[in-house]
Image (cartoon, rainbow over the protein chains, first blue to last red):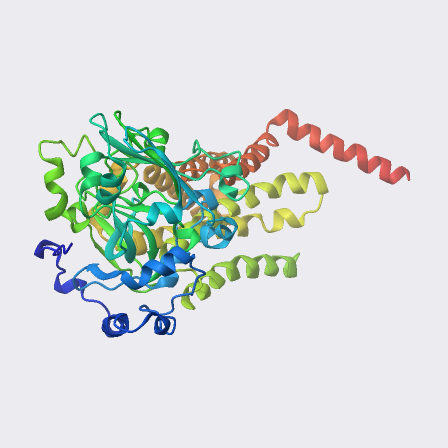
Amino acid sequence: MLIKIPSTSDCKESDVTPESLYLSRRALLGSSLAGLAVSAMPRWAQAEEASRYADVEAGAAPDWFKGKLPATKWQAVTVKDETITPFKDATHYNNFYEFGTDKGDPAQNAGSLKTEPWSVVIDGEVGKPGRYALEDFMKPYQLEERIYRLRCVEAWSMVIPWLGFPISELLKQVEPTANAKYIRFETLQDPKTMPGQRSGFALIDWPYVEGLRLDEAMNPLAILAVGMYGRELPNQNGAPLRLVVPWKYGFKSVKSIVRISLTSDQPKTTWQSIAANEYGFYANVNPTVDHPRWTQAHERRLPSGLFSPNIRQTEMFNGYGEQVASLYTGLDLRKNY
Amino acid sequence: MRFIYWRLSVFAAAALVPMYWLYQAWIFALGPDPGKVLVDRLGLGTLTLLLITLAMTPLQRTTRWPGWIAVRRQLGLWCFAYVSLHMLGYGFFILGFDWAQLGEELVKRPYIIVGALGFLGLMALAVTSNRYSQRRLGRRWKKLHRLSYLILGLGLLHMLWIVRADLKEWAIYAAIGVLLLTLRIPAIARRIQRGQTGRSTIVTKV
């Protein structure tokens, strides 16, 4: 599916990227053209393909991922005139409290996460519940590259090229019943490999839980991702399977998913349970509703320099209003933040 | 001046730490959001220096070494230097020097208000840290400088409101803070000193 990014999300003159970053963007465009050429080549030649993005650390992709990669729809969704965040930053500045609360902790500690074998439980209000090995779970889907803005509730943001598939396709497979109103996601709970879950001072009641209204999950922008920057997900970014909902704050996009449930009641989500006045169920990016402790009107687009902090205005629904605003007609977004 | 080398080493250590952080930011070792990291570190540095400063008196009482008191004022002034840089960094990296935004944040956000009160407190102590003020204020000087206990409470509250999910780090700072304040409860402070004199008599007997 081709989704055109609307003009409302176009950038202003003031957002123009510094030249050095601009040049890396051109390199990216060049390499993606090369990618088109390469995708016409036989499979054996693909191993030779240099990464589409600069300085991407090679991973050890599972076989099912390698098998799917050649058929990927590259740049199925792009952002206009925005620089993609360097791979190093996107993989070394993470919130993944299962591996520690510092931004660098996940990159340092997530090596212990075992992503193979991995299975996903589908349960609740579905016609076809079950536990699936990840390779079987992924079988029906073609990968698409979705380049999305990511806006964290802490007022920083990035631009990340994800590889995944729309949740709507999953829902077609699992056949929700008439009672299904919400979709609930659960992260792995494994204190042995997740040091953050061993902390006696953690305020989080593990496992981490997030959820969406079913119609939100059906929106074509909502995806389950298995890769980024042309490779499988690094552990610290939520390997092997994570949610990406670009019009909501990052904490909604739950990582390392082991269970997907369709429910009739609104799921009790992790951050809402800890501080309902700070983190709502909807958590739509909204510059007019402050976090009680800081403004959401601005964000720091990373990398943000030491001498020229890259501060910009936050856009309603993170700039995806044209595609998602209709989900919330009649809803008071000040109350349902 | 007594303890000149001791004083200089304390000075060098306190000055080198933020310079090292700045160097790290310069060589991109602080990640993609160096400003935020600097602000956080300077905040924690302020709290740490406040705790160290408050540890000098109990240390002097237990060890009888006057060197602790010799660096106490300097450490307090470093604490103010760190908090000033913390505020400067907050204004530059987080607010982008948007003064209207600052006004709004000061009114709306409890943790900013608490932090700002702590900053004003430290400023009052820094301004009155010289001998002239000590003479001028006389007995009231000591009373005024007990404000540092309140500032410690404000600093811990400021940090508690920023911690989002894991209280471990905060609990360590808070525990040390509580310990240092407990040592100042008159009965306990007396006991420390008495215990000390008791032990030293044993030493002289041997």
